[in-house]
Image 1 (tube, rainbow, N blue to C red):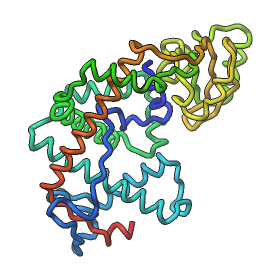
Image 2 (image 1 turned 60 degrees about the vertical axis):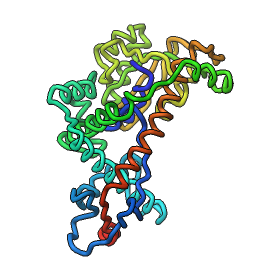
Image 3 (image 1 turned 90 degrees about the vertical axis):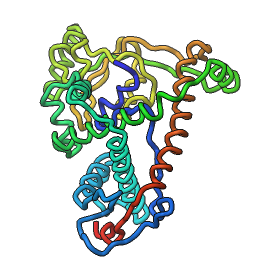
Length: 330
């Protein structure tokens, strides 16, 4: 299992699969090039209009609900006024951004074929048993159709960015070497741990498995037989990862010695058991080890800079109307 996907499995942020670069746009709510943002009295269910494409109250409320789940906010009462303002502004920015990029894909005649989407869909669900997958969607309070629509939009935006921005940007070897020499202190590998993992639905089932492990049964075989996590079919092997790459529920796993098994760990996704099978100490990295990481970082920075400039150009040519009086009622 690739290191960058591990955390996504547990937090189940499937609809936020990487799209080549991290999109981090701050679409200004008070201006759009030469077009002044307007408040319009008509259309109580319209939160914003982006080049005649309407963002509805329902669109906004759905995103607000999912964002609250993401940030573990159960009730509005738990948010301060400034926190509510930030959350709503962030959601609106994301919806406007998504609308602009969708429209740009249409303008440039970039489409997602049914074959491309089916392949992407299979990759997103790979390794999950059907009931486990549906349970993760239920936890996030998103329906299957809503999730698939968001996934399709993310794939379209990924394809748009790849064709318009990413393919045009190259990083030369001289840049990599120069960056390494100037920033050698950045390139260290933290302590790494390699674990086997079993996830089941109930504590009773986890206790029965723990008892079998203590009796000498193979952890890998038990993972293949009982685990509902994606790596279960390969014996529960999660590969190596560093502290901070997994959710906080699993922090104590790093304290285990090699060949030791964890206590039962409960999370919103199920009940877990880990076995540490190897550890690697912290050490400095060579240039060859660091080369790929440096390339990824410099490429991302160059792509993001080009992306910001490109989106500003799109925004300056767009008409964005925001209905603040509607926002205030949500």
